[in-house]
Amino acid sequence: MNAITPNTPSLPAPVGLLAELTHRCPLRCPYCSNPLELDRRSGELDTATWQRVLTEAAGLGVLHVHLSGGEPTARSDIVEITQTCAKLGLYSNLITSGVGGALAKLDALYDAGLDHVQLSVQGVDAANAEKIGGLKNAQPQKFAFAERVTQLGLPLTLNSVIHRGNIHEVEGFIDLAVKLGAKRLEVAHTQYYGWAYVNRAALMPDKAQVDQSIRIVEAARERLKGQLVIDLVVPDYYAKYPKACAGGWGRKLMNVTPAGKVLPCHAAETIKHLEFWYVSDHSLADIWANSPAFTAYRGTDWMKEPCRSCDRREKDWGGCRCQALALAGDAAATDPACSLSPLHAKVRELATEEAAETPPDYVYRTIGSNVDRAAPPPLKEDAPL
Ligand code: SF4
Ligand code: FES
Image (cartoon, rainbow, N blue to C red):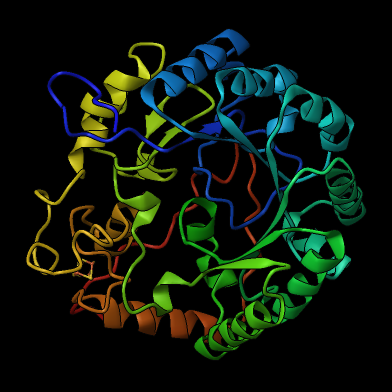
C-alpha cells in the first residue's frame, strides 16, 4: 500500500483512473451516465496535461486507466495518450462505441500498447440498437470494429446496458458476445444517474423481466464456463442491498472529467455542495488525500442511521451517495436502494409504476441542449407518489 502524504499514512492508493477524455460522442444513448451539462471541446485538457495526469497517476499507485468519454477515439491524440499509459506501465482499457473514427485508429492504438477494449452494444437487432443509440448504421460499424479487435488478439469485453427497450434481448447479447469472440460480457442493468435519471420512466423494466434476465445470465454462466465470463449488474431499484458504488467513496477510483475536474465517482457533480479540485491546480496525490469532495464521504464517520450501526457498512459503504441525493434529497442518507432505508418501499413502488406505464420518448444525450429539463424530484416517505 502506498502512503499518499505524511498526514494520511493509512490511505491506500486508488486502483483505477477513469479518464473522461472528451464528452463528444457520435452516439446519443438516453442512459448515458455523463452529466446533463456536458463539457465542450474548447474546455478539454490538452495532450501534455493528460500525460502529466497519467504520470501522476502511475506515481500514486494507480494500476488501471479507463480511456473513456464520450467517445475517447474522438480525441486526435488518443494514440499518444495510450502510448503514455504503456510507457508508464498503466494497464489501458479503451471504453468505446466502436463507431465514427474508432476502427481507423484501432491498429495504431494496438501498436501504441493498448491492453484491452470494452465495446458498447446498445441492442442485438440493428434497428433496435440504432434507435437506442440514436445513430443510424452504427451496428455494422461496431461488428467490424469487434472483428478487428479479435484479429489483433486484443481482449474484448462487450458492454450491454439493459433497460426495458432491450431486456428481451439478453439471450441475444450472450449469443452475440460468443459470436464476436468476446472474452467477457457485461449485462449491466441501467443505473439511474445523469441522462438515465432523466429517462428513468422510459428505461425502467418490470420486476418479472429483471428476474427472467437474471435467470438467463445464470444459465449461460454455467453453459459457457471457460469460454465467456458474464458480469451482471443488477438494477438498484429492485435490489435488497445497494452496491458499494465506485468501490466505496474515495477508496478505489478517481474520475477526471474532460476539463480536468477530479471526481470520486462519475455523478458526483450532482452533489452541489461538494468542492471539487482540478488537475490544473493540484496534483492527483493531493486531490486523492485532501480534496474536500474526496474526504466528504470517505470511510464511515459521515454515516447516519441505519448505516451507522449496520454490520454491512464496510461492505457497501452505505451504497451510492448520488442516488441517496437524487432519491432521498440527502447525499448522507442511506441509499434508498437498500431494503433498510425508510424510502425503499417507495422506490420499489415507483419502479413498478413507471415500468407499467407506456414509456415516454427518450431524451437523447446532447451537448448544449435539454439541460434544463427537470429530472424527477426526490421521494418523501409520507407523500404519495
Ligand atoms: Fe448498507 Fe447502510 Fe443498507 Fe446497511 S443500512 S446494508 S450499510 S446501505
Ligand atoms: Fe456517485 Fe454512486 S454514482 S456515489
